[in-house]
Image (tube, rainbow, N blue to C red; front, side, top):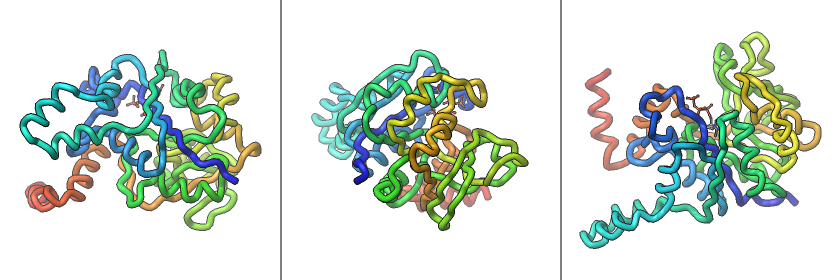
Length: 287
Ligand code: UTP
């Protein structure tokens, strides 16, 4: 029997250099798409997938994230007094279930950030969600993964096909079996040059991992970009546990970069009844 996944890790300690100066003091994860911070979309996706414990790996200058997931006593009081029920609900709905915070003292890479969460998740499977990968999907990407995970166990990542010329931006799977939706991998390579890439299937920021990852993360080996890479540790667990990739259905936006972020704002605005018509009319002016 595969153990259910009830814990999720949100690594939010990165520097967000691609979005400077906006992210000089504002955490990248607090950038809003339409009217919600990126981190809140990730939390809602996790909640929909059955996550009960929410673990944030934060760093210096990220305390706004903690504030966002706490009561805003004065604001709530004023909204209540003024009868602004919908606004009040939107503020109260922000808060997930059990929340834990830990600090990554230096941004040494995603693998290192996930390793910092060990004390909260060790012993069972857990999800990792990178909030700057924003996914428009119904049901949410993590929920789709949970359904498949019941069959696969082991390590499962969300994947999408990318143009071969872009492989050096992503972790790329070395595939042994592919049924069109689910793939089984025998390896993965972080940011390979197009001519060296074993496939064009890239890992995006959704993972379900088992505790076998931690001894490999603990070695603190530097990988691509001189950072401790999560993908390197995952590659080392192949052979110990099954490793699968799921072509999720939906669209992913790289909100760590400007173009993806702008596109996400338009795509998410078009899903909102109160905005869609006006946004479409506005876009015609720029066509
Ligand atoms: P990115 O690769 O997007 O790095 O991290 P970054 O520092 O956030 O942004 P840029 O590239 O400088 O613009 C992917 C995810 O991993 C987290 C980030 O917060 C983001 O959610 N991360 C990255 C950490 O938590 N710690 C790290 O040391 C590195």
